[in-house]
Length: 265
Image (cartoon, rainbow, N blue to C red; front, side):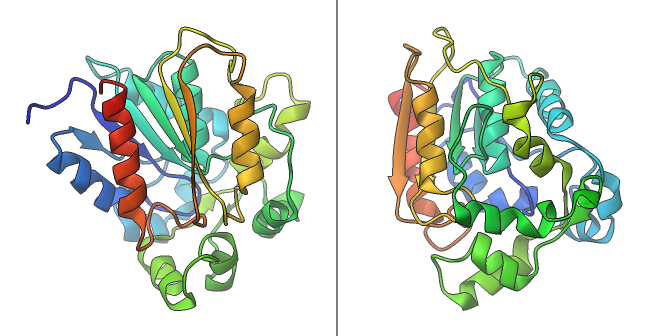
């Protein structure tokens, strides 16, 4: 099979390392796609180094994360496809809105500006960071109990603990604060032109058991695009926020690939 013109770039969210996309990258590579999983600004590409030196990313905000990936995408001859999870899903939508991506798949995406629902489960997932304003320029890593609630509620405790040990890292707190005040900030980095009609296709994937980005939040993001004639679709899976890394990852990855193929990519 010939390699498609558009490479596939995977972008993770808070508390997971870029290497957590390994299974997805192998699946897409086997299907003929060129793939990469760039790190967030300041985060070492080696997982253990990322755990040992969380201070490198302290104070990095959402705007810096988006710009970092925008510069990376601009280095390609052809526009890449972007697949993002959680805050990576927000970044994917931003890059698509800027005309930098050939298509985007936003999986359990953190809310873009204009998303109004704020379910209790989402507040509880973010509480370890947002409860103290002094955390804004610090870093934080979920413990196993916190990870179990935020990511692993739809899988066994044993699997949740294994995923925590395998993939989690400390992450910069600032994007959570940026997102929390976005609807009150005219210059919010999470602002996306959802009415743009000449953008490339967007797929939003929602985990209906997700605590960190509840289904109501993903559906609200989808509805913001209703006035755009561009392709915008929503898929729902009976999954939690660990949707990209747990035992059921392949179902979601293959659905994403099939959707891209349907778009001619």
